[in-house]
Length: 459
Image 1 (cartoon, rainbow, N blue to C red):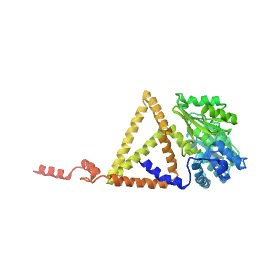
Image 2: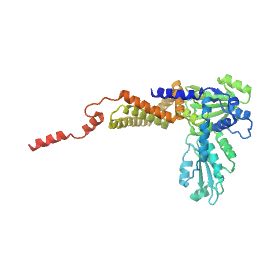
Image 3: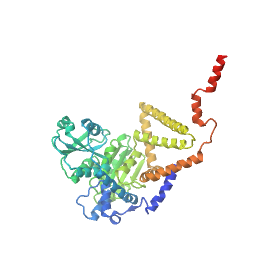
Image 4: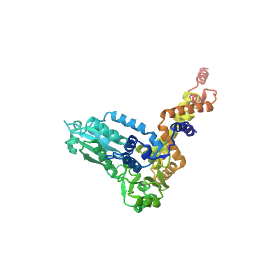
């Protein structure tokens, strides 16, 4: 009921914009040069050397389709980029901080400026903030390390001159060792292109359609590292940065591949073999079936949206914990809204959270049993994938992405809904002050009974 209420309130917002959210638009006809560049920056596609509008439009088209709802958020994205450029650069506080953030965090990508003792970082402040603003949407973290904070670390690593350091997991397994690579250019565009190239090497290159077909069909195997695969069919020779960055976040859970469709003949073979309709397609293959990303509402081609999509398809235990915690708090607040006293509200919320804690303790206990853990994990993965790719799951995720863009509307609607619940389902007053006071009265001694017993003892 809450979901339908929120969805109904936000439908007029889309109509006020005059947009059909999932309607595809032709970038060559509808979008201007500034919008085309903003889309390419959002997707992480380099456009150095492209001057004409038709060249930019071809790059956008080769990286994936464009829909109305994606164009509608471009202005917000541009404002976020300006805010990131204005933000100050982050610095490491010492060697221990560097080890903790860069080398011990094995599922993140770091770009670090190293400034030897007595020297300046390789990039000036504005150029560095420009690089940081461009890489931040792809979850690439940045920082500056001053060697005077830990001379032993810089000496041991051989950092005797200003340089750029790229740290990323070495292989495709989860929590793999961190590999550090050095780059010495001071041009922002060269640095961004270098980072894009290093990350794109993590995406598997497929040579022909038969290999791609076999690669997709192997998703039905029982090995956990091959259950979910995402294959990009594109004219581009390298994947967009948002897809390459996702290969780091989902290492060991999702495998990423790319098949370059060079000409019309290859395009016809791909369409007939795999049943896809567009030259540029993001095909997700799971044991439960295949799904073309971008065919649903609010499925934009950017890091954040596809990250949320893949988290729903192949979640971790932390994702399940966060979802269950959010649902528990929602149910607790809805139930607490029907209580008359503040104590009753607090006890209701406490009871719901204790029940959630007990449930998770039972789940964690069962997960330690060898013959129960594997079937339980497999069943959980199958159910989560089925829910994520079902029609209700697609609708819920689309509405979640839409609501995230209108937080004030979401808050107001939620408050109005809770007020309506309180008006309709408020508990009737009962003798003794309600459940909360009855509960406390059972715990505390009764003064009347205590005085009566004292009088009997005197007699």
